[in-house]
Image (tube, rainbow, N blue to C red; front, side, top):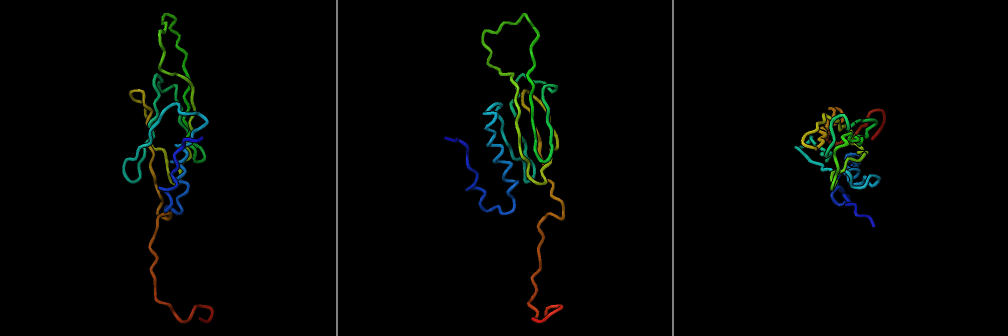
Length: 151
């Protein structure tokens, strides 16, 4: 039985924005990697979003963030600790490898990423070009004669 949350009831009225909705559905559907690492999806205003991934014990050189063909890929490589003097009595901080995929909607761009206090934050922004923005079409009264033919 799937425990995935369905966004369908919330997104019924969003005709023409299917790929934007896929961003949220794909965030909910990373079944291949399970629930590791945990992450949040935040909305900061109308066109700004942030994905925050728990990357405990990792450093910048352990993480890779790439965008290719509208897919954001976040990879974490496990580092081996070379300190032989450490004996773990309990090791609860996972430093295992992971790979997360997020399909980005049209006009969504990654504007930056940073690692602070064990949290990898990836900032996303929606930049819709003028020609893709909705525009109002004026309605004029019906004319009896259509150019090039009869009404």
